Length: 79
Image (tube, rainbow, N blue to C red):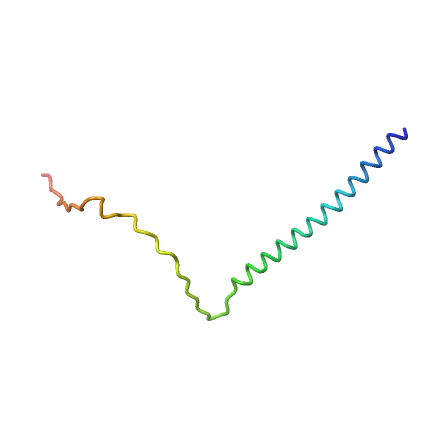
């Protein structure tokens, strides 16, 4: 009977330790996540009337000059 109580006591202690540790790490993770989110959205804010220009990279043309030549054709009316 005493060994059962010892085992039960060990499980209860382990349960509460895991609960406290998990709560501590979860709070740190959420605080870090929220501060990163706040920083991201704070840098995105622009004042009213402010104009910004963002240049995008120009993509290379998919067509090359080695593909062949364009041949114009005429439609023929079939009667």
